[in-house]
Length: 461
Image (cartoon, rainbow, N blue to C red):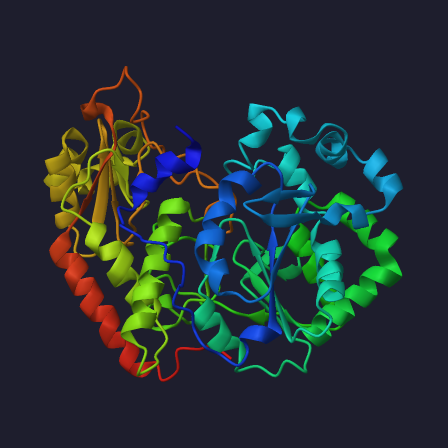
């Protein structure tokens, strides 16, 4: 069974893809070019779901890759042909690219096709190529659609909440050089995280494109020394006088199954705001969000209102929480109770452990009792000999799901998922099990809903 098919177990949603989707109506729709960036190692796995869902409502989009090909009747354009020929022949980052040009997909092996993998796997051939796409992509997009007011850039596992994005962009003056992004830093360079999606107004794209045309060799030399193309773009934007707008929480680096719904950044918590993107989605999550959006648009045909994060969690996350889910990792990342964890405690801290905490590693019920004994604990995970409790609410994934790819919030596997569910040598008792204190989940939702009273505007502008 394929990688994406197995992951569809994360969400159990019946979705009917109709020939005529319900699409938001906005005067801005025709003035936005959506640019989807991908690569040969992932395109066949990640793109088809886009063509069945969100892209059916987007009037104009283009796909840039490292390999010219057609997928499901849509053309993928080789954007790396814009990079200097000498560089493509001399820099080892282009080994996969040159191989693709010489042999096509026939030259790809299983390990290369696996994708970028956990933590970004910066030694993966596809990942090495990706950083070279950003500046050529911006330049090509401008040539493709010079009159677009906005250019929105996303990745193959980014979900674009199109109705919300249009309403949000309409609040900015497209005649000014805007760069809207989910803030990240590498060293002193601020940039918009590529997987979270970012938007550039027409004047901003023109400034960046002009800089690329004037200093391509210089920018390529800089790119060769770095590892993240979105960071290179951020530096170039700053060099031409464009400051990035900090777009949190509208642009998200995580998916609905992995994000912390109450995380606070820049003095904002997502709950009361409107999402424009999610990242690191698998096919099942795409279907769930698309079904949610279609229902939302149908239900709000006469009284338009934007869905907020709280509406998403209530529709696609809360119904999947249980007192217990077997073979499930809910990514609990708080206090750990295990022989190894106890050994690291000081004698004083060991004596301070409550009876429930001491017994937590012994059973699922003991782990639950430890969580219930701590007022802020809302969920926990248990595997033989290890209990982890958490004050953060997350759904998580089936225990056989692979590690997340790189993002600022998930640069590594947050915790081991235990034996694979499909491993014939493993018994169910060996799996990781997830639990939620459902009464506290209900209280959590009521508390956060109440906080929206002080949020007069669901948009950060």
